Image (tube, rainbow, N blue to C red; front, side):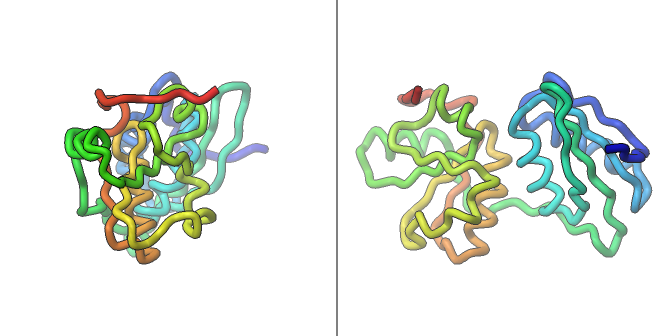
Length: 190
C-alpha cells in the first residue's frame, strides 16, 4: 500500500508515552488535511495513537506493519474538527492504590496495557482489558464499583477512564503515573 505523507515521525525504540509526545509536537507543524506517518516499535502504539486521535479530533487513517515497525497514519484535523484534548478529572496516586491493595479493601483494578505488558508484571487481582478491547467488554464490569484504571504511564488509562465515564461508570479513577513506578506487589502470568 502506497500512502502519500507530508511528515514522517520516527518514534522507533520509544515506549509509551513517547510516540504520542512526538506526534503531538509534530502535528502542530502541519496544515489541516496533511497526513503524518508515525513509525514506532512499541506494540501498544497502535491503540495509543488511535485513541489519542479520537480524543483530539484528528483522523486515524490506519496502520501497517513492516517487520517490527508499525507505521501509523493520521490526517490533521481542520480547526472546526479539532477538539481540545481532555483529561479524566478523577485521578488517584499509586500510593493511594497501594494502601487499598495492602489494606485488603475490595478494589477493582483494570489494567489497560497490552497482554504482553500485563504478563510480565501486574497488580495482583487486576483484570487485563487492553484499551482497544474496552468498549466491547464494558458488560464485564459493574458500573457501581470503584474502578481504578492503570497502564504503564497514565495516558492509556486516562483515555480508558474517559470512555468508561462516558458510558455511565461514575466512580472511575485514573491511576497515575502508572505501572512503570508501581512499588507494590506484582504477579506474572505465563
